[in-house]
Length: 453
Image 1 (cartoon, one colour):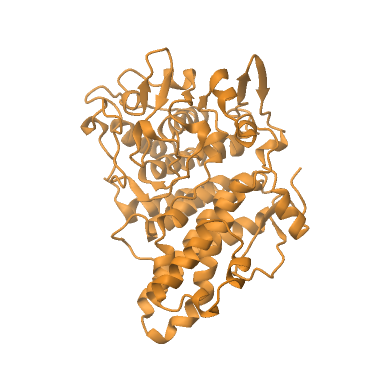
Image 2: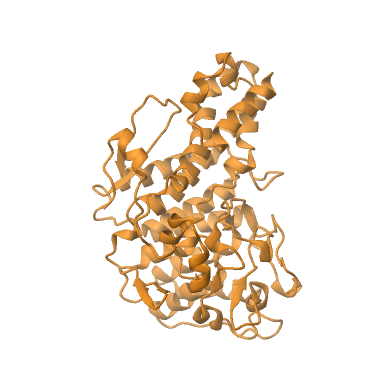
């Protein structure tokens, strides 16, 4: 009976069905309530709900790829076409992917922990509680990269943030927080989770202290709080394993999938669902990006497949799908942490430490004996190296979109992405409102919340 009940609840969540309506239809109301430790853990262990909801849209809107006109025209879904060139697209699917998946699941778990306290398994419940907080914060951060303006300290207190659902009560009307409140809730959940999370897990689909440190590093970098971003990147690296960077010389560059799922750099596993624009047969790597990799840079062979027609496709995802990928790996990995620590050191004028981290990473990415360590005499020079390598290393991770957002007003490193569709150029200028997606009208109409511009 417990297994039956749990499967019903997971089915409700993963199918994007209105759970209130669904629960109303259950003949026995007790079936809707998880009431054992195993029930709660099983909800958090649902891979489709908790580890495959990173928003693919973050990859779709990046400037790392393009599609040919014929492939663009072959996409019949207008929402996908609009997302590709940053047109207003209030698509319910992206919102539901996060809110009707991991957010509601974590709130169901948190709301029902009290039901199982009598079992007396405090250690297991503490870990479940902490894991739920981690997942909720991780996915609220993902949602903030789509549905809130880029974080600016001077306006974060008044900029419109997310509706922060902190319980599973569907009768509670959603209201928008501020951007500052959104990020502070994310930070609060992560900081509260850390003392109760384990140092290691048998499965990389479950969060650890290192995963929480790494997510905090990512959050603080997005906020421009470089001191805290560097501190938590350092904690993550040391809590996980400083020497677990992969030597790319040991990988098979001719393989269709050079990287394995859960490889030793992966700290926490999260991937997106599929997206037709990112299909290997459709998405072509930006030519200037491809040419930025040196000939001795092993990433040039490990990350890309030559299509034998002057174009290249991506195959180097950390989820191990290779040439079949139309997913985005958005999990926490060790290489990202080295790059965050390098950038934050550079921004604090600690140039030798910054370049030491960058060189340690790059030495593992070049053919044996071919890498010459980089040096920088100014902050701008160091940041130029680091941000360039960040783009090359973290391609297809969903992080380029956040980088475009956080750097769009930087006079030295701002980029204006463009799409060429049938000879017409579409640009995403720094002042464009399309750095923030529209909330689906169904949500606005039901809640009365204010829409994004």
